[in-house]
Amino acid sequence: MAIDFCYEPGCNGTLRQSADQPYRYEDDGIPVILLGVTLHTCDTCGAETVAIPHLAELHELLASLIVARPGSLTGAEIRFLRKQMGLSSAALAELLGVSREWISACENGKQRLGQQSDSLLRVRYLLHSGELSQRLVKMSLDAPLRATPPPQPYQVPLELLAQQELRFGCAGHR
Image 1 (cartoon, helix red, strand yellow):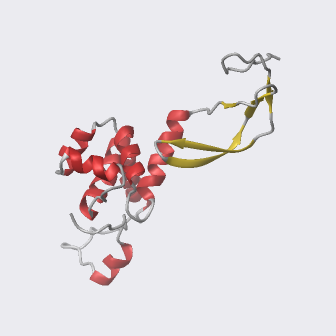
Image 2: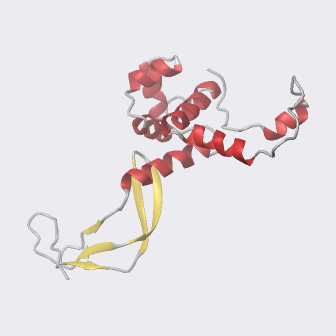
Image 3: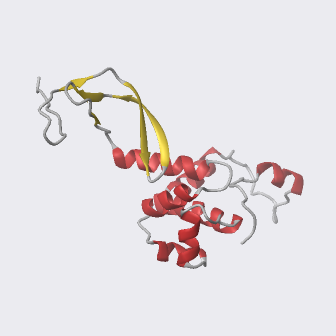
């Protein structure tokens, strides 16, 4: 069994492993409670370290949870999704048809994205991650097989459409 020493400058303490416990992790303002993480605490200075396995997969999961969350995206969520897609604020601004300054104001909580920009950002992330195509394939595989082709054109009562509508949230219009 290897003995780990404290990483704090000037400390020669030994790290002691504590039982798996909830750990608060925050990336770009997105707070997360991780369960089952092993925490190491220095027996001298009390510094804590933790190894988070599969960090890239964790960020992908967080982005998926953010996209699926009802309500308007927060500034931290906008920044997180933008970075997950590898976009600069200027590139995101161009994608959404707004100024880079507007994106900055939204990411800093001074403005909110309008409903269309909010929805477009979510769909863009789903396309980027491949989730949208996976969801569409699953929907088509789960659809019941029909003995005859469906009638053309499709007829959809508006009441049904309102019940099935994906609700990504609304923060007003821009």
